[in-house]
Image (cartoon, rainbow, N blue to C red):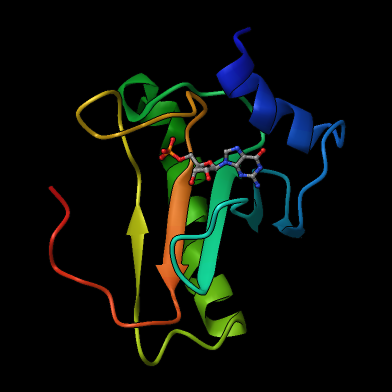
Length: 116
Ligand code: 5GP
């Protein structure tokens, strides 16, 4: 296991600290250490998947749960009415830096249309 994915494994096993704000049988959500917006939460599977390229039909429930949790947390953090963005980065061109599948939930200020 390389260091980059090990970070999220260590957050799950509580070996490194993170502000965990939601956890169920399938997913865990915690604040990003370098927030890009006032609300910046990462939602990860409880079991390791490297990238979006590695999902299959067996992950349908998990992926649905990740989106459902993002919507619930947006309401909990009071950003749902103004709006927010969810992002999954994949590999180099997608700017993925941690090779453990994760969804970004970003909000709390006006975003911009530009991505690439
Ligand atoms: P990526 O660029 O792979 O889509 O996103 C990785 C995210 O993980 C980045 O937003 C980065 O700030 C976050 N991150 C990296 N290391 C840590 C850490 O140790 N703790 C937390 N909470 N977030 C981290």
